[in-house]
Structures are given as C-alpha cells and as structure tokens.
Image 1 (cartoon, rainbow, N blue to C red):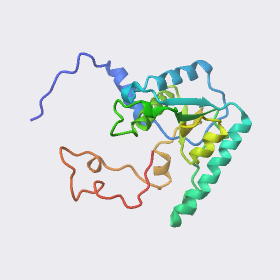
Image 2 (cartoon, rainbow, N blue to C red; image 1 turned 30 degrees about the vertical axis):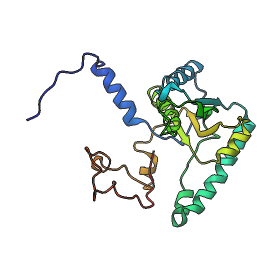
Image 3 (cartoon, helix red, strand yellow; image 1 turned 45 degrees about the horizontal axis):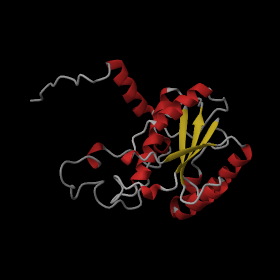
Image 4 (tube, one colour; image 1 turned 90 degrees about the vertical axis):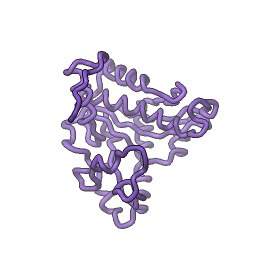
Amino acid sequence: MTLSLPPSPHRFSEVECEAVYRAIAERRDMRHFLPDPVDPEVLQRLLWAAHQAPSVGYMQPWRFLRITDRALRQAIHCLVEEERQATARALGERGEEFLRLKVEGILEAAELFVVALAPGRERHVFGRRTLPEMDVASLACAIQNLWLAARAEGLGMGWVSLFDPQRLADLLRMPEGAKPLAVLCLGHVETFYPRPMLEEAHWASRRPPAEVFAENFWPLGVPGWEEDRGLASSR
C-alpha cells in the first residue's frame, strides 16, 4: 500500500513544476547552430542563472570568458581539432567512428564562452579539505544552470571538452593557477535533437535507473556498479 502524502507548502505550481522537469528532459548537448545573434537581454539572464549556482563553501570558482574576437575563436577551434584527432587515435578501433561525429559548433554558434576555475582556489578549505575537486563540481553546477536556462529560452548549448587546458589557458592569457574546463557553444538552433546526439549516433545509450541508483550499500554483481571497462558515456 502506497501512502499519499500532501505536497510541500513550498512547492511551485503544477505548471511551474512541469516547466522545470521539461527543461531537464529536453536539454541537449547541441552541435548544430544557426548564425542568428542572441538577444543581449537574454544573454544577461543566462549569465545571471549561471552565477546563481551553488558552490562548496560559497567559493564561486567559476569564471566565464566571452569570446568575441574572431581570430581567437578560430584559434580555439584549432586547439579542439588537434585534440579531436588525438582522441580518435586514443580510441583505437572506435577512432574512425568517433571522427564521423560532430563534436563542436565553435565556428557556427552565435556565442562562445570559455569557463575556467579561478586561481587561488587552494585558499578555500571549507568543504574541500578532503575533496579538493569540489571546485570542479561547483563550476559544473554553474554550467548546468546556464544549460537549463538556455533550453527554457529556446537556445541550444554544447559543452566542448576536447582541448589541452594549459594551451588554452596560455592562448587566453590566464594567470597561473587558472584552469579552463569548458568551451561552451551557445545560440539558436533549427531544432533540438529528439534524443541525446550520441544516442542518435549509436555511440552510447542512457543507463537504466537500476544501474545508477541503490540503497545503503554498494551493490555487488549488479551491472553498472562493477568496473566500467572502456564504455563511452553521453552527456
């Protein structure tokens, strides 16, 4: 017998809840863009959403660089292309399949951002003494906020991680200690993919819930909870 519990008094309206869940379900890692410019007011709302992200110890480690110089954009594209080729070689027998995938929209998207971790993060001990990588987790939350807000505004976004971080940092004159973690392509799209692109391309599929959710103790002998041997994943 399932108990029916009353909703929280702080719950959003039904329409508002549906909108939140729809944005989550229909968010896509986009690679195909239209050249149409993004409304500056919309762009400011998206950046506001990114900056509202939670962060461990309230450290707010994210730094967003908007790339408006066309030569810089081209240089970033070249770095990504070099890493794309290196990744194909590292994938071995899946290399040719990987090269057929469109993995970025750097030259097509209306807006391009590089998101980096700020220098001096070692000063932030709260929540990071045993888990220093929580600065990365905090930055990822900011990107996800931006992603969901972009989808709600009808804009596509793609997260590109194919680059050498030190070379990108040098290109953008970042100080020592800063580390770029994402190149974000943002803009209008003709249509959103009905499913994640890597599912559409049969590169990987979303795991069933039983492979990622459990209770109390790590389940032994369950697919997804044993060592993952060379499986690709999809954002």
